[in-house]
Image (cartoon, rainbow, N blue to C red; front, side, top):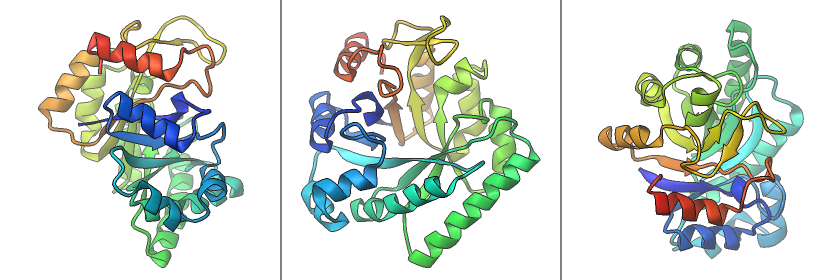
Length: 264
């Protein structure tokens, strides 16, 4: 597996600072969600680097790999603004040879109507991707409606060939599933994994509270053992959600704690 961090955990960091943070903790990959306080990554890149080619030249030979650019698009209920943001990111991903653009599942029911809506959005993307010759593709995060293995399996049956970013915490905390069991049910389509820890105490936004790695109940050790035994080679990313949950300590501290405890 490839250890990774999300810049959601250091939302005010510049690109250089985020890459330096990963390198300092010997983490080989980052997924970009926020930079310099914004989720509008294409605007940030254009302002700071001018063009995709210039950014690619700057990062050539960098010791930390960018494995995903994370967009706000929801397959279910996609808005024009979300579609525009996704399309603005694609040329940057192409120039950087980034394999995936992250999008959300969306919805709440995981039923046939929502899957039809998701399929329409995915068809829109696939047509544009083929037309423009892009190599980058979408991975769909299990974020809103896809919170159990069964719903993910139904989704994949309706949208075959879709790549999954599995948020292992969500299917554990929201879906009530053992992460090892969920993994075994959906692993064939998982290309990227999110991990984090929490306790069953309400916070401002959720009926749970995120905590330092190892302070909560997330069964990280058996999950990691299973991923290694199955020779998963994709990113396993600490998604430290400080952008949305300011009560969290700095990502630098969370990474230090995770290392000391051998959590990840």
